[in-house]
Image (cartoon, rainbow, N blue to C red; front, top):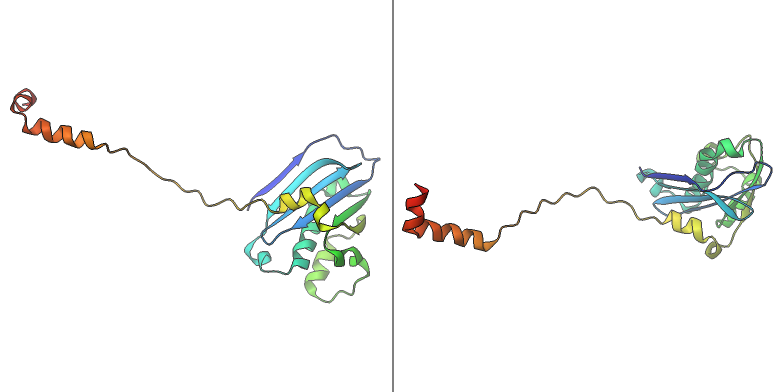
Length: 168
């Protein structure tokens, strides 16, 4: 499973953190920001089981996975989570209907966060990170040149009596 995370700038723990998350059918992506300046990027391919899940679960997985990835920055600090999945902005006031929701919500316990809706087309960076194409399996191709003139030279040398005399 491909995982990428990069830190781009110095963190200031007295400035509010913002996390933007997005999920496609195959990948999640996130950006850690301070004052609208990107600090770190994260993208990860979803396992086959999660690829079959609903969009709601994809987006919820993106949030919990990102918070877990940057927990050492976020724990003990208030932060904002921006998602373009509108139903997640009311996550804490929703009725938990499935065991899966309960598992995801338990991963957010202990964090001081607010989830806000961000219109999908304005979520450009995380949208790009969540749509990184899958890396195809390594393909090895062995190519050996086989010029025709080498075969013609071999045949001509076998038919040439002078060459055969020198050869023997």
